[in-house]
Amino acid sequence: MSTTPSRIEIPVDASRLPMTLPRLAEMKRLGEPIVMVTAYDYPSAIAAEKAGVDVVLVGDSGAMTVLGYDSTVPVELDEILMLAKATRRGLRSPFLIGDLPFGSYEISDEQAVATAMRFVKEAGCDAVKLEGGGEGSVARAKAICNAGIPVMGHVGLTPQTSTALGGYRAQGRTAEQAQKIRNEALALQQAGCFSLVFEAIPSDLAAEIMPSLTIPVIGIGAGPAVDGQVLVFHDLLGIREGLGARFVKRYANLLDEMVDGVGAFADDVRSRSFPAPEHGYTIDADELNVFRAGTEDGD
Ligand code: KIV
Image 1 (tube, rainbow, N blue to C red):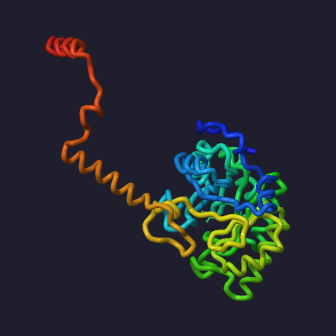
Image 2: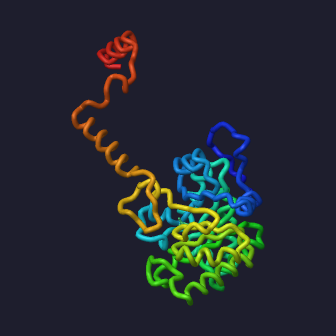
Image 3: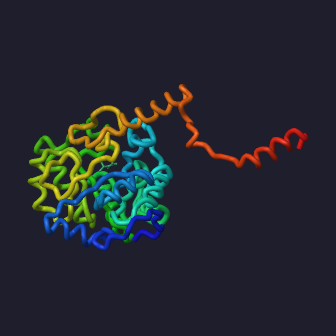
């Protein structure tokens, strides 16, 4: 569905055709784990592309990881769109999903469809994601699907409305909450969502719900019974301070490496060991002499 040409130049590997909805459904059917990661810009997209992930989400988590907000609530639609456009330019194969930010879809079906269309037309996204499985979110998901744009739902911990959920904490730990999550998941599937995210719910609850779902479910803190896993780019690579939520596994400590690298540069500048001759440009001696003579003549 994406129309924006990708800028990335990597050898075309015939075995890595662009990811599609039928292929994602097939992966679920075959029990092949689906790998999803967030990305927010050109370099993170290139990392996802080259690592061969299946699905990339331009998450509204970018509000915190790259834009420095305290939560995902304040981020503007245009800010997330800018991140999505940069991400698109670094991707060729993964399926690209844009996350609808808080306030950009809740008011009406018309608002939701108009916002989703911007992600597709302006940023070249293949699909959008929205949070929540209540009546409003289900209606918005249905309206966007009816407009021809694939939708990923998101239940369990939904950070945009975490205040109403009692804070940034696991959901579905009482029978009543568990029933609510199950109903929401089924309603989103019924509304036409092609996939769901389960965030921060008990592994046993996810395992109980999975047999009722025919669409792929991607988990983040939902245990192993789901069809795939997603982590936030900055969490898995250690590009943020602190350990983050219990469900985060860290595969690198890039923030430490970044601080070390910038620190080494600062040391070199202060000790005048950078730049060295090999970092500079030369001018032919004759040209320099002509320049000097000209300068003496007052030119
Ligand atoms: O914004 C985000 O990064 C997300 C993932 C946690 C699924 O919604």
